Amino acid sequence: MNDKKWIVLGLVIFLALFLSPFLYNLVTGAKAAAMPEVVLTEQAKAAKQCVMPTEFMRTEHMQLLDEWRLKVVRSGLRDFTNAEGKTFNMSLSNTCMDCHSNKADFCDRCHNYASVNPYCWDCHIENPQGEKK
Amino acid sequence: MKSSRRRFMKLAGIAALGLGAQPVIKAIAPASENGPQTQFSQGPNALTARQWAMVIDTRRFKTAHDLEPMIEACHKTHNVPHFEDKNHEIKWIWETHFHNAFPDSANRFTSEETEHRPYLVLCNHCENPPCVRACPTKATFKRESDGVVMMDMHRCIGCRFCMAACPYGSRSFNFVEPLKGLVEKEINLKYPRRMKGVVEKCTFCVERLAEGQMPACVEASGGAIVFGDLSDPESEVRQVLRENFTIRRKQSLGTEPCVYYIV
Image (tube, rainbow over the protein chains, first blue to last red):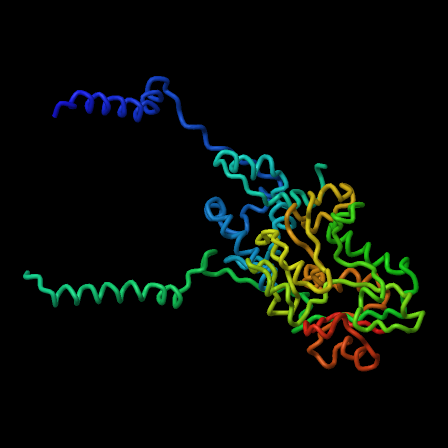
């Protein structure tokens, strides 16, 4: 056991490196970036609820869109009826983006915060009413 | 408690049974991803068929100019880009010569009038589509519900096997960013564009059929193109097919094209 001092030294260096981000935050008092605030359009506010409850949409909208895509493209089913009995045309451009026509303030804010980069809008048009451009 | 070999085997068996039953339980009691009470349906106005088909009356078209309204209607509706460079060309519906459209029907001596007519060609939505068999990702498939040969653009990896497999050249590949070939103001905001690296083709206007409208080219043809259900003996296409002599493209290949031509 002649290498004891080297092992201890190594452990100390490892721990210092490992804990450095935590220590840095403790010392500087840095906080996590604030949750992004999404902006609802007037139309979205008036509708009160999206196609599904807000909590569901917040966490599961990607799964919902994925299922919509499958149903529309593969099965030729285009209408979606939610638990309240309301029917929607399953279309990202014509339904989602019609209401949420503010992509920069709605979609992008969260996507940027979560560092995800979906390429929906390479093909799907972001404002079907053509208001902005 | 004394553990024995016998007891261990019993426990292991029960555990295996439990694990094995899990998918069965899931299948019996499916909790829909979107909650329990949601449902999917076709729109109330949707046109339905077992197998869509088209009959083109080529006698009605004398010059290439006569075909332009249909080509333009299609390409405008679906945001099909226009490129001058032939290598980058994207086409869903286009004009061709008799020899190219019907190579196995072209005789050495044939009616001049028939030979020099322009022919409108598009995806044949074959009953036995070779492109579907070639696709490694099942991005292209023959839709069970109405026989349309569809593309799932999200799934296309751009391998172009389908283009090699299609005997009609109905598929185009986006070699360049398709937005570059579109005029910004003329983009149909109701229909998506495509991205670089995917294959595209005619869809028999499924998005219009779903809303109860006829395909764009049929609407623009002024009655020269008839569209309907091939499996329904009472449908308009079957009526027209009964009354007129028709040919199909490269029928000898056995793909069973669903676009018929009155010559």
